[in-house]
Image (cartoon, rainbow, N blue to C red; front, side, top):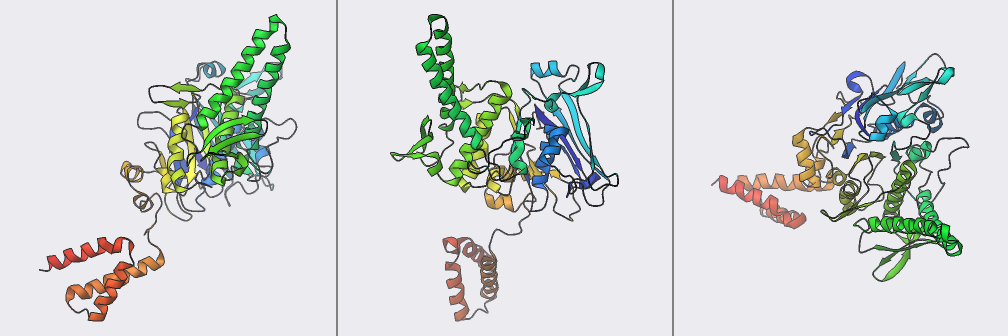
Length: 463
């Protein structure tokens, strides 16, 4: 399952018509998987965008639990608002669930003010009439268990400590998939618990196999071996370029995950915040996939020498750069795409390094508050400059809108040098001013070689 089109109108900072969100996320070749980045200044609605998508993914019942109050959800002054998503899928089993859909379907949530404090939530999505009651049964990702419809979403926290995600009694497990997008106090500790349970289950099966009679022994041994292979594959995935600075996962036991760095063994909780955040994210993605598909297939792509997880789905990540050093910001998108090649990643960021992993048509600019522009996909010229250029190139594009890459003091320094250059070129600079200029140029990186070269060319041009 992937998302092809998104429409959002009159939700918080997003207006109606051209002031809303109307996006087709298709790549030039028609594909949807890969890295799509939403960028914009603070207050442009990046978090709201992901939350709106998450609500439409989980469905109306779960939406009411994720946001107990919609009183501030509708844009001020608006009578109604909506989130409308067109999904696409090619899994044969999903086609059986939605016969006649042609591999596409639409789901939408609507909010309408009717005079009360709380807007009324309505919805439109795939459903069938259920038996003699005539009550519609929701299908697709809105189905109660949503098996094989995979998505999940993460807020900027993504930590292993804090409150775990424990849905209310009777609540759908789908809420846990996106809980941290709506509550930063929630943690991802359950991903680590999941791997710990696999380890305990494997030991339990092995013990039972040793004491079983011949008719059960081989079956228990097979199940224990499958869990051992699964655990080894998960560790192999982490060791396939995810961790930094020579760290490698060496063991997982009842006490947790252990890594080795420079010959020293460290527990996961002893690692940096960035390392813990990345491990927590990957663990939770794997756990959610295992929960959704009832299995966790991990494949070895021998041609490209990479371990991959083949499932389709949508993953939302808010401020993917949180906790990460710039080198990790630069590589995390490429790593996730390489190891989850069929997933559509929709991420928000303030980092030009995160944008370098974007796929074609995968850079989206959110309009600033009060700006008379629409949320838009950046043209190819901007895309190529961002993904193939340096961070200075990226932040000076329309995607980020920065006017200069220099600090205020650095701008003042350059302005003073430029004024002295003018005097030097005109031949009116005093000895003191020449000395001042030489001193200021030395304060620039590389001795101001670029500015010196520029001045020399101007002098040569003047003859």
